[in-house]
Image 1 (cartoon, rainbow, N blue to C red):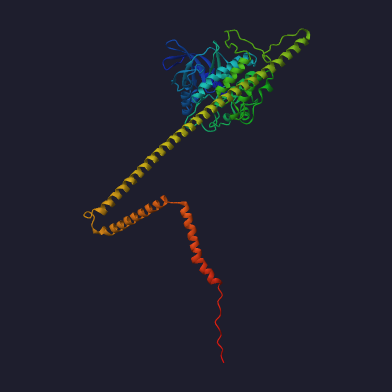
Image 2 (cartoon, rainbow, N blue to C red; image 1 turned 30 degrees about the vertical axis):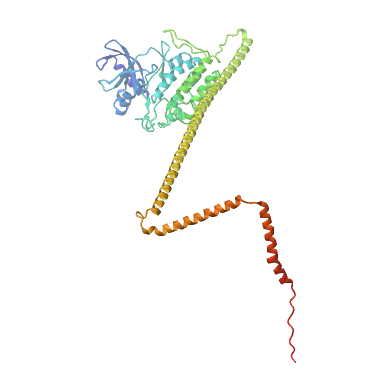
Length: 505
């Protein structure tokens, strides 16, 4: 926005003081003017004091901008978290300017707090602020809402020490079914370049998700701790290009005194690739809580009215003392304490990482063990069912086999009885069966003859005498020699005389 346009918006914003919106909200004073809207303090006709955010008149003429301003202003209500500023009402003023009515906060922005502290905040204070911011973002991300403009100016610390996340005006509600942002034009850059993640700076809205907000949280921590932006550049346009193309430097390079545990959180949040950042706001929140405990817990964020607090940079949580006349001993002591503190923080960070790793591995082992037990139970149940089925099949097969054999026996008995009847009953079974009857009669005769032979043989065997049999065998052998073998030998050995020759005279 040009300086002339800014002056024009400020002039028009001041002209609205005293205006009554919707017949109930009276504008009392101007709180601030931004590129899209002016913020006023106002009072309802019932006496309730509120803040009114009114879109600039020239922007209200654009249907898409006005619609987005009114609709997406309710993103904070959707989150339903005390750290998100709720919207109480919305309407369009008589001059056509859309406005939102929100709760009025008393306190200061984190940017004002940072400026008042000399553009450096201590690690514990930054962690205490970010811990509350991440709680709000976690609730928002679970509702598929991405803020897209997290920066010190949009973080507000109330007098009670609560941190509020302001300006969900460019927040985007992502559709669960398509995973793409609604109503944001392709290639349209929205946000603050110094706190834009690479994918947001490139206007890749299909890649923007909760981890985009985490990059902005890391950039906010980087700035609060170091007093400079992640990407320094002469102009906003050049800073936008750097955010889109360059990797963030380690925060320790800009602020060497930042505790190791805090630096590790910031550097991971500022990873160029989304998959290298914290997985979600819950994971980053857990790391912040651990680091905060390691540094001694959260500091009170409340500021007494009219009594600004100045904070000097502190090296690793150890305060330095003024040394008299050079004070080389105290300098050496401070250096030793700083080195010892850094080593302690490094070891604490490593122990935390190892505890987290062990806890994660233990959980994964328990889950794997449970899955193995469930699988083994399923296998055992399957084996038991198979054995039961096998036994059932065997019983069924045995029963059917017995039934078949019994049926066969019945058929054989009935066939035999029928055959016997056919042989005897000449009336029921005619002469055509006579050949069969004759055959059966012959078979019966042969069977009776065979039975007699068996009886004779059984009788002979019963009267069997070993000595008589042996004598009979000897006598039989002698008779065979005399009457069979001897004649054959005699014929073979006798001399046959040739007949006499006849003389021819």
